[in-house]
Length: 322
Ligand SMILES: *[C@@H]1O[C@H](CO)[C@@H](O)[C@H](O)[C@H]1NC(C)=O
Ligand SMILES: *[C@@H]1O[C@H](CO)[C@@H](O)[C@H](O)[C@H]1NC(C)=O
Ligand SMILES: *[C@@H]1O[C@H](CO)[C@@H](O)[C@H](O)[C@H]1NC(C)=O
Ligand SMILES: *[C@@H]1O[C@H](CO)[C@@H](O)[C@H](O)[C@H]1NC(C)=O
Ligand SMILES: *[C@@H]1O[C@H](CO)[C@@H](O)[C@H](O)[C@H]1NC(C)=O
Ligand SMILES: *[C@@H]1O[C@H](CO)[C@@H](O)[C@H](O)[C@H]1NC(C)=O
Image (cartoon, rainbow, N blue to C red; front, top):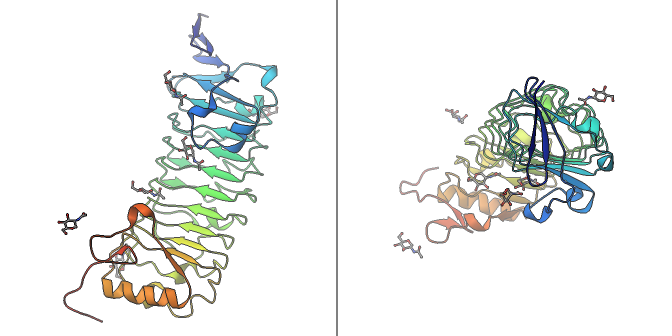
């Protein structure tokens, strides 16, 4: 078998040409200030980063034994292109609380990827090319609190993908290609507080969200016929974000009378960048303010130089209709 040694600034690779297996080591002295919004334990715990690994789909990555790194809190990947995570990542580093694997070209998560990730609390897999999440893929991570999957190519999520994640508080699936999410997938996440689904093509269906939700972001989903009736069970919901949809209907359709009895925690609503006529929006604003709900507007969405109500843009209607 042929051996190649490839060395970069801080990483050495041993390449076995025939089996196409690459062994690698991470850098415990990586300058974490180069990344913004790293998980907490990557900043304050013991961390180690893999850098400058670029391999194709046919290469298996295997981690070297590295005793000094056994108790790592965080492992990250930077300046790297790999289609799968190293197969023994969590076998080697069982203590890992945080995984930072954003923007490294991941194409898939094979079934055993997280088999030994039972200590994971926080996983960031954003900006990859994942297309599907298979059944029970995250189930070994039974204490997981935060899962970040924004900016992937996700089209399909198995109804059992999030089984066992009873502690999950925050899930970000924004900026994907989702049009359907099975009811069970999200509905069973009994501890979920923040769900970010912006920039997909979702339809909201009755009963698809867990009752624990406090913040629900449904912005930029081309929603046209959305009504709060479809989320009637969300008694803990405080923030509802509906910017960037195609909502235009009358107040009674979107906010039917009496809806705030079941949705008793709702306090903040975002409605910018929809298709409202100004008269319709005025009725909505009157009703929301009467019920002490706040209309929030993201600073970059505030309209000042065309028709708007409280900074929320709307269309003037010439031919008045009811
Ligand atoms: C995930 O990582 C990306 C890339 O560094 C970062 O932009 C994003 O803010 C992180 N997401 C969260 C929720 O921490
Ligand atoms: C990626 O590598 C380039 C060149 O070596 C470096 O300038 C840059 O800071 C690295 N990015 C990160 C996130 O480490
Ligand atoms: C998980 O750990 C078990 C026991 O050490 C081992 O047999 C298995 O191969 C590991 N799985 C992965 C994907 O690392
Ligand atoms: C959706 O995309 C728009 C435009 O790119 C961006 O401004 C917005 O922050 C995105 N929303 C979410 C929830 O990611
Ligand atoms: C909204 O409802 C109208 C009329 O019922 C229907 O024609 C349209 O396709 C619906 N839009 C969406 C995005 O489902
Ligand atoms: C306000 O809009 C008008 C036309 O609708 C335009 O001529 C003017 O430059 C705009 N002003 C600013 C400050 O954008």
